[in-house]
Amino acid sequence: MFTWAYPDFASAILGAGLLALLLGLQVQRTRRLGRRLGLGSRRLAWKLPLRLVAGALLLLAWLGPALGMRSQAVRTSGLDLWLLVDVSHSMDAADVTPTRLLRTQAALAELVAAFPADRLGLIVFGSEASVQCPLTYDQTSLQLFLSTLSTRLLPPGPTTLRAPLDLLLARLGAASPAAGAAPPRATAAVVLSDGEDFGENLEPVLRELGRTGARVYTVGVGTAVGGPVPAPGNRTSLRDAKGRPVVSRLREASLLQVAAQTGGQYVPLNNRENGLPTLLVGLRNLPPTSSAATSRLVQVADNRYRYPLGIALALLLLDSLLTVRVLRPEQ
Figure 1: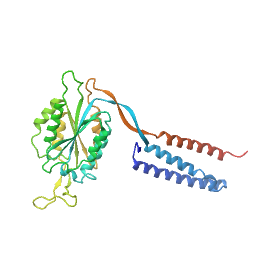
Figure 2: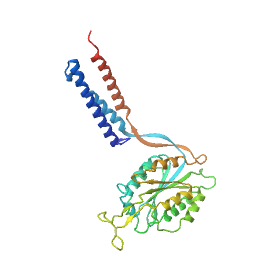
Figure 3: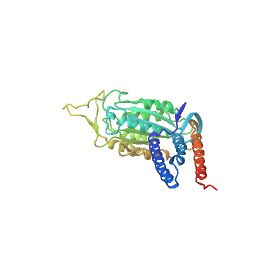
Figure 4: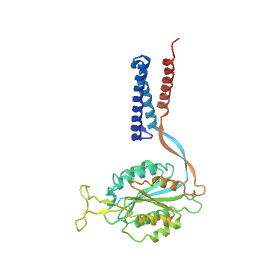
């Protein structure tokens, strides 16, 4: 199946615009040179199609045309990474473009792609918590679950951070290796939420999580100014008992507390701040567990960029040689 290894079409469009600008300048230069040499511009501009084809092939190579899949050995640190995603109704607020939840989904896709050889699991939470996907090496399945995230997955009600942390703790206990079993794996969790918490005291579960050695990183999705929470159907805003629109604001305090007491880190995610690169650095720098690092074969897109790149370079070389021949004075 044909795909793109680097589907950054915005950058490709920018590159195409730059290419068009350079070719336009080259046409103007050719006309001036033709007037000076007493030649028609067509005699000097006949290579324009050649350069257009070469430029198009360079842009094609930039996008990475991929055909099929191939196996690639990837070094893994033996990491188990749990993703705890807030799907409460406040995540539909649009103070982060396009909405908090959609921005979270985009960040999760990038986060998952950064750990192709490690096990990842997904827990969703709102008024309660549920394991959406257990720890797995199958990124295709995990990405499918991430693409279907919705604020309608769980029953409506006040958001609680305690429920997903309790569920995470239970999963960590169930995964504890017995004597003589496989070596322990490094464990981390990432909580992506707007921080609204109407649940119980977090201190007991955070103490237990601290004893397991698992680090919990938190991502605050939203802004301090906040935004109105849309009613079901997203046509109007929710209103309180006095008829005023319900506004949801980022609550960093609980997220900072979770990160601080488990040795993790807090990062923001909104239209002005993107803490994802900082988060990835922190996760990659987790101290490895003894003998847990291994190599795994993963399926990646078979990038065929070499073919359009090779043809483009050959055309540019031909362009250079023909330029020397055209400008060489006749004997």
